[in-house]
Image 1 (cartoon, rainbow, N blue to C red):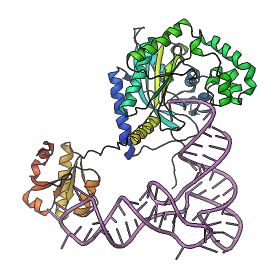
Image 2 (image 1 turned 90 degrees about the vertical axis):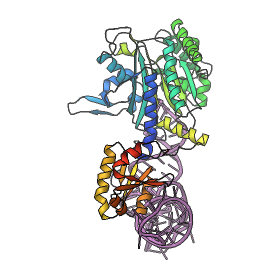
Image 3 (image 1 turned 135 degrees about the vertical axis):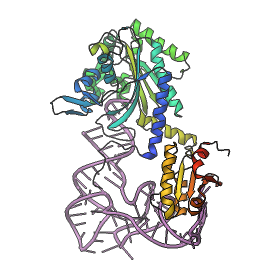
Image 4 (image 1 turned 180 degrees about the vertical axis):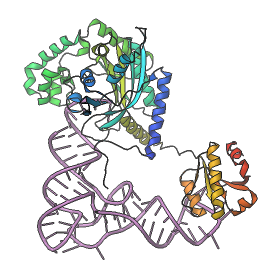
Length: 428
RNA sequence: GUGGCUGUAGCUCAAUGGCAGAGCACCGGACUGUGGCUCCGGUGGUUGUGGGUUCGAGUCCCAUCAGCCACCCCA
């Protein structure tokens, strides 16, 4: 084979595409119910957009972006993350209109590109279902975003869910926390791993989510952000929790070590996890980013959002199906297979095929001109519901033998009435 | 980017350094115009790729590509 797909990217084959479409349809329907509107942004943006939003010192910006120069010398980057382009469009397309207080709720289904070493559940191109609500600091909105995600997961049969919740504070209270954190860690910094020693200066918050036991032990008694929140952040964090409980999402877990990898998060940070994915068990995450719109030159605009990795969600769905031993539903039988027998039947069969298609039927014929046995066998395997048999006898009588491939019953139908017959209820 | 495991037919997998195989799937026949069941037969392979060792390599060695696992990090 001369060509293979590049590393870390996947084809979605016809066998899999139904699963994708069902998930996408469910997500669109849920977003409509939650009153979020779809937005589609370009697949690449100015590199600077992501750098500013995500943060210079993050891994995503430092080593994971697909960045290239176009022929005009501009530095562009394939969508590395969903929120920054939406915020850009929110401002550039004036989605708030004249109403400065207007809440703008947007969703998207889009490919994301990150240069990472692939493994199951981690790809260089993946797809995210995301939602962003811009224009309100109401904690009920944070809860709404998590409710939307929960409905999506549940609707796909993913019931064994974990929701981790934290608050990472704001520019008012975070510096104090970082200072206390560094003070608590500093005496034992030498015991920590190289990564953590680097994090200490660059991004001390990340000291908290190092997985090494020795590092965790050092930070175990360090002050928690949630104990040091300012009044606003504390009130908001409480508000998110009570709103979640109010709408029946009372199974979340507070996780003071949860820190997200993008710099723009303020206050709420959350992550959904599901079994069946190995180490890549995060199937969605997000939080509040009250400073980002302003960072992009817009008016101060509080906002909250989520991104869900569809590849991982679908893996979790398959794992859930396997655990429940439900198995995939048998495909619905649909359509008519026109079985043409003999030379004289071929052209009338093509005419019938075209008539059926124009009448809205799914219809197919055997272009290989095989035996009736082969044609019926094929029609059965491909999941057709009917076989319309056209041979010498039928041509003479100007009718068609209509065979129900599920039951094996068959009847003679006048050729001109076939379309009508097929749209009648099956009880016939 | 670091470390490890694995690449044989469409799929799942065999083959002590000595003739590349099985099951499923696919095609055909038994059944000349009737699918699913059964039986019989058949097609299908540069053993991921490129080098090397050897009389001889799917098997050993090197490189490379890809997948997987654990990191880093993330969805």
